[in-house]
Image 1 (cartoon, rainbow, N blue to C red):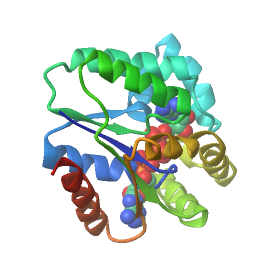
Image 2: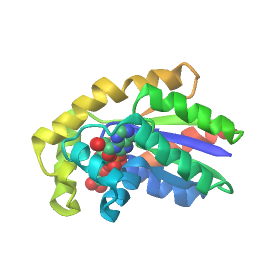
Image 3: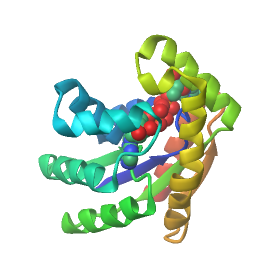
Length: 192
Ligand code: B4P
């Protein structure tokens, strides 16, 4: 099984690269952002609670996203592997993911981090906000808050995977196809 964590700040290109990776490696895409937005669209109680936090650029509680990932893993037992996009976003989420994958007799192969500076991130998020209708992409203050939340709460997750010798960082600035080639090179090297 091939399990990849695609890591990086909001707007780094995780969703963009995930779309290309699932086509190339035939993996199941698990984006906690997409799963949460689906709950919002369906108007579930979970979605209503998550929306308030997401619109403000804050993280949804760990137990909520861990529960969604647990269900998704159980729903995709025949998968060749998973791309985890936007998850784990905290160290407790990373620890729980390891436990959940162990229950399925598998583990994370590698984490690929896309590195992009704050000004470029904010530019990308606000640009996407012109067409995405995502409330969290509409406002510069919220975009900067998401980057700040990433720096304090999510960035330590890199150390968690570095301690397992699974962490690889790439420059996330450049042509999307060039970055995709570099991400594939890291994954292929890990599989070899
Ligand atoms: P996400 O849906 O994960 O949102 P994101 O971080 O903005 O997405 P991403 O980083 O994938 O966007 P991409 O670069 O592809 O999360 C949204 C919210 O959900 C969070 O703020 C949080 O509230 C909640 N949440 C989600 N997961 C959670 C968790 N595990 N725990 C707690 N809360 C959680 O795209 C950005 C733009 O850049 C696009 O327009 C794209 O076209 C552009 N772009 C991409 N690559 C580019 C490149 N190389 N050059 C130029 N532009 C590029």
